[in-house]
Image 1: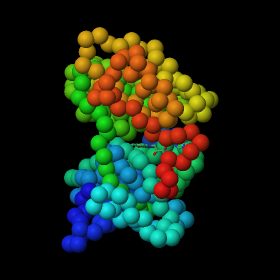
Image 2 (image 1 turned 180 degrees about the vertical axis):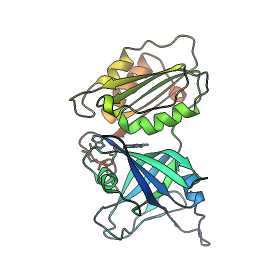
Image 3 (image 1 turned 60 degrees about the vertical axis):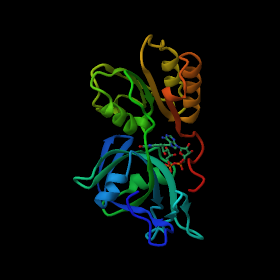
Length: 262
Ligand SMILES: Cc1cc2nc3c(=O)[nH]c(=O)nc-3n(C[C@H](O)[C@H](O)[C@H](O)COP(=O)(O)OP(=O)(O)OC[C@H]3O[C@@H](n4cnc5c(N)ncnc54)[C@H](O)[C@@H]3O)c2cc1C
């Protein structure tokens, strides 16, 4: 991360980012544009361990980060929850980071994003890669929470990459513009009245795909955890994908908060 360790090599402070503006991207997705020091912005992504303060707490007590990356929480009540998000865009030149929050109606992060106004703050404890790898043929699959990551994977793909992106959203109003190589098909899947994480759309769509023959493959899947488990098992068994050929990770769990630290 951006802030160097102190002279005693003890825990370092987290990077605090301030809200500049918010945009309603779709009815269920709110983009929060944040700013911070150029170093903090450069380090803030693509995957983020966000520290989200309670909306009714004017003075969150931030944790610190130990040399080994462990988060050192303050004693007692601190009013901060740890959640994973993706920087959809980070631009050290303008000093801005965009994070797209799904307003799923519950939980500290969704609540914070729904209430975010310019001047509000959150913090970044650490960042990590997206887990993708270059390949000639890409299978990308995810729900609304994965669209920021999928947009970055598509933006980083070779112009001649081929493949398919299976994108589960509630309906047409939740579709977003995603720049993509012309050889990668975007296929939007609408779950309609089904609750998020309850429709087997993504797993079924993957199960209906035949393994492309003779291709250098990589599969990237992120959505509700049970969906991802089913997709991962299918891709390993039917497509014979090895560890280096896929990244499949549960981004949220139906009925469960995502972080014990929150
Ligand atoms: C690496 C990574 C990157 C991620 N990137 C993003 C991102 O860019 N944007 C984004 O919106 N999310 C992203 N997520 C998912 C996000 O971390 C979870 O949705 C998280 O649970 C939200 O925290 P919360 O405090 O709002 O809800 P929590 O306190 O974790 O959960 C409260 C309740 O809400 C439910 N819930 C959580 N998420 C959803 C959802 N999406 N739909 C319906 N119900 C839900 C839970 O099942 C639980 O019952 C990412 C996750 C990971 C692991």
